[in-house]
Image (cartoon, rainbow, N blue to C red; front, side, top):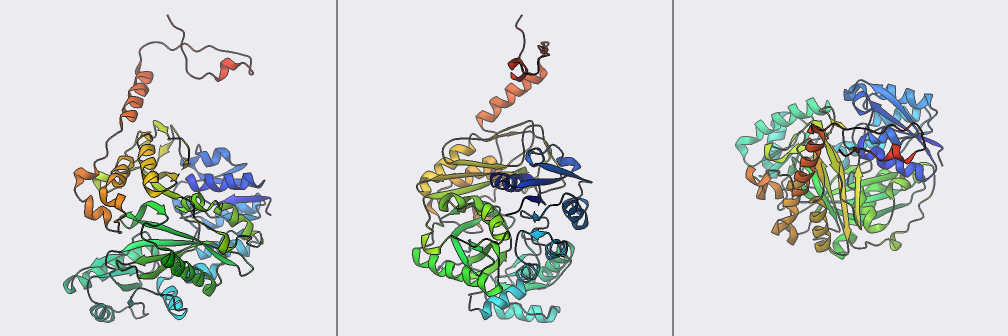
Length: 498
């Protein structure tokens, strides 16, 4: 096992990985930009390194700088987390070239699975179902338009090297095809430096269901069941759950086997996720593979009892998987809500500012993965996700109720959040029935009044108390204790009554 690991990330995922490392007796090195100097991941790491300029290209995306720091502190491995450089083959190769273990798959696997066209061709050869469409190399407008006509409408234009909904357009008629392709290509070029697109048949009543896999470096591959990720805004997930409300035992077996086939076909190692689209008739199609730990991994951990972050470290250090497919079972139900600093009533635009108060809910089977705390600033430099709230219960109904209860007690003051909006989604009768698709939010929350985010009563009370404490005209007299071991030094804010 490694003795020291550098975590090339920030926020809640950095905290998650640092904690897993420390529980295993591994020293950790955090990196941070100037705006993150007081962030929790910096405080809990054994060592920390300032990257300076908060601009992503100069900090968390600066490969030479990160590699150089890893060498200087003698880190044996680098964990990329998710986002930033997690799926960058150049970063993985730079690690290998520097004799630093990259905790993830090999660079060539990242390259292959990051290319939607090549990955789909590979899966077709392996007899894994793929979405009907055009995945060819010819990218001239005439070819793309003709192929689009063959597929029929509606269809989806997707950036081949993309993700997160960028370079993606839904086309409903012939008259919109050319403009949508041009628009998708422009955005793909701007976002990924590659304007290659593919065309796919639009799936009826689409659900986004993914399978978690683990693969060691000795040829052993297992899956850890599915996650339902259909609740999305702007093509990005905000609520995930497991098990999926529609996946039967038979469908789970077929999709799980397909996910394992995907991993074995490309020689995958470490943790990864195989993503499928499922239509209204429960036909499933390979969509893509994420070559990293997913944001939503905690719900899989909740129902399987398997620590995915620790297994990433074990696999990267050369250990064999001791988990057997036939021994893995799902117990109960788990839901994750992503807490964002964003305004649901204004197109989910990010909200920035100082976090005046952060108070997370607690209780049995409630987990908080967070990378922020009171008095930290939410900047415009990075993704606005603040934390993840995870609940677990014996069944789906109880799990939903527990999450609604927890969200009602989640307090964030200083920025606009999606907390109340998440609660409204969970309370919706169709969500409770399990009747969800990737269009759920567009179908039921297109009215801006439905997305208006209001503060819960607990938050209003907390705000009133906070304001009274910081605007009182009464002089606050602090007792000055010279003895460093005196209990009076740790009592916090108090005043002498008059």
